[in-house]
Length: 466
Image (cartoon, rainbow, N blue to C red; front, side):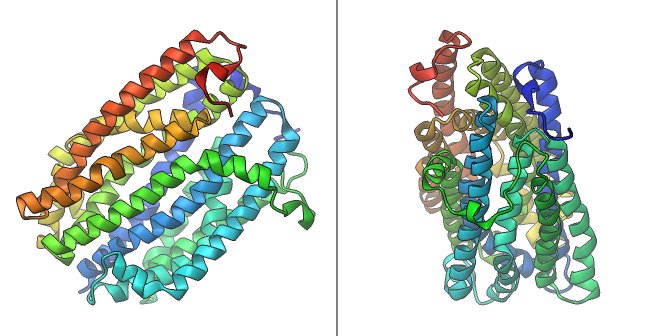
């Protein structure tokens, strides 16, 4: 019966083959997701006469969108991790309850975020760095995005569960569908219909809505081992499941929330020391760097069901193996990002803008910001491993260390010392280096603990259980 078999291959198939099977769709999906965001930036950056200011307005919305993402991951990542482990334990009934719970929680958080954003949009955007010149563009874009926020939460949350339930190809296909349709609709709405930056936002929401419809059809199939209940009463929040799910998702939630806080201060410091165009330059640099980060996240998504399933099945050697292979590939990806940033900054930035001043600022920022980029992948994968194993406190600490403990102080100290926005750019490689050193120590300790466990042993020696 199609879709009814539990993906037991996660516990038996060779790790290298499994990682290719699960990570490649995840990489394609996450790369496509990054391109999905980049498409908006590329088209917006070339809107006649106002492209540069539109790009700066778009950059202002990043922190607010990060908050939305944070709440989405709080629910979605925790549920996906729990479902992976529950499948490893062959506890299918609870896995379905987690799925229904995830839908309800995403609707609640999505509607709450929409209401708050619409009520206080202008003060929020100004707080995030919008000036009189960039506020109209930021408002136009964010208004549509906020209206479709619940759709966004549900789509990304359920997409993670599709992948965790053993169907990474469908998860990839849905993401590719949204990218392709967005690339088609963007120029129509922006240029043909003359909707400008608001058209880009509308295209984004419509594409996610179509993908969500397909996802619901997938989970409403009663023949699947993981499916949504048909009766409304089954969607009442189970607070015990919610507590466990939110606890696991707290690490990535705090990471995204910290990212929002840091971007807020980055925006303020860039405007203070470099003006609106410096903010637009960061928007471009962030999009370029984000492409490589999303590829690493694709590897993480491939690792997540494999590590979670095998930890639940108490096959610790396979957990170690998938981690080491994932960390190696992630490092290679970040080395590629470093090479692009240092040796091909000009042609890369040219994709987003033809404004010479904005181009110069972004090219310079890209070189400085990604000087330590090769070590970012290892740090991300190690943090994700702690999350996969349900080690919440350590996952949270690693998620917060780079951004809040190291990056945030640098953002304020270095620009004041150098008396220019250059200090903001140099803050990134410094914080990346310190965070990677701490992550390395914690990762080595975890691997040593795993190596002391024989397959089938109780994992309580690790100090945390899922």
